Image 1 (cartoon, one colour):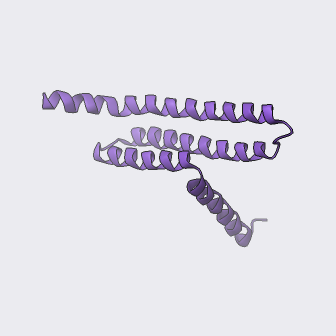
Image 2 (cartoon, one colour):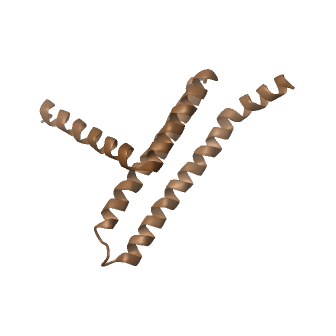
Image 3 (cartoon, rainbow, N blue to C red):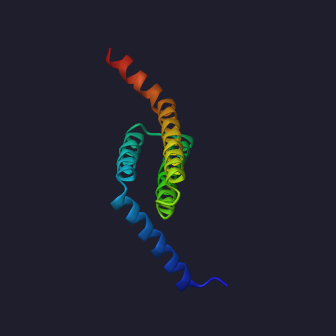
Amino acid sequence: MLSGNRLWRSFRYACRGLWRVIGEEQNFALELAIAVGVVLLAVLSRFKAVEWAILILTIGLVLLMEVFNSAVERAADLLKPRLDIYVKEIKDIMAGAVLLVAATAVVVGVFLFGPRVIKLFTTII
């Protein structure tokens, strides 16, 4: 049975976790700031609904991967120093996953904003 009190506590725990990631993970804070800037550019560019959907999903994926990376890194740190070589590999793999998602987000950004930038420069010239 669904309990309002238990649901409220779940949201509080989730928010506490997000605030911890924002406060303690420099990359997440940077990605969040970039996301805010990109959203402002999308507002100024008058994105259509489909473009908004693609943009929000892409931003969400990048932020989600960074949160996941932070959680896996903390879990891996529990294994140190007993399994130090594996901890390094785990962290490297997760960093690679974040890099892959971030690079994909850049490509999506080029597709979404590229035509507008080209149109702006051709109008100026």
